[in-house]
Image (cartoon, rainbow, N blue to C red; front, side, top):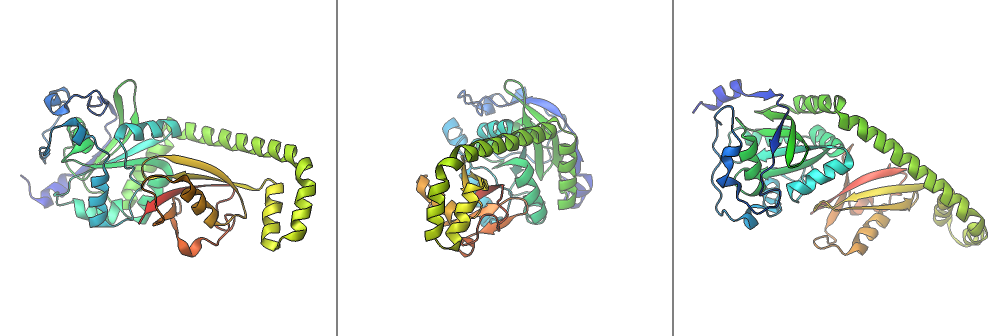
Length: 336
């Protein structure tokens, strides 16, 4: 085996757009990929062999990758791309619905380049913000579960290994580009930006976002026109009784100044709700608490993606417009 210096000199980033068949275990048909790995030939022998799993049962292999996230955060901290803690097929569906690519990271814990890549590149602020704003990210260890199945399918030649993928036809996966070997944060963002600029997804996302905003404006205008005549007298009476803060809130509601907030949960679930632009961030926390979702307790904070900002107890009194959440915003829930 080559020494680390020779491996670094030989590492490269390769454009490898191709179609591969998703493992049937990931597709949920109950077959063990390890008995069918000959279906996915590799053009070159891998530098590192994947360690065998401890348990070959499909039920254990395909559990949501909470173990990967816990292990990753224990070693590298909580500042990292928003890796969804759900099955890979669910991430592909989210990417299709949102007209985005999937950023796939396969983690080789014992590789000599892994610690530096994770600390300096994958967890750098510029990479985290860019990925959270433009991609749906998923990560998994190559030693178990779906990470092992995907590593067996994609057959990385060297590590660190990242890929940009999209759902293909049928049970296929469209590998747009895979990056093998260490890269700097600037190089990684440049590669990802180039992919977005030349992709059909990029145009579809822009068109879909433009249509969504136009539909939202139309709905707001219709709602405002319908309710204005009914609420004008009630609003006038309320304004006389309430203080300045409540007056601002009533005016914002009457003028249709709404903030549309999309909330992403760690398990991949999404909730969208409209607030007035002068509502406090506290209102978002109360809305999340009212849902009573399993695993979501009081010990969490909200994170915006691009630019990345964290909102906890000290920011609950800021109104949504001052926080930059008007007319819309996407927030992630980060468990503490």
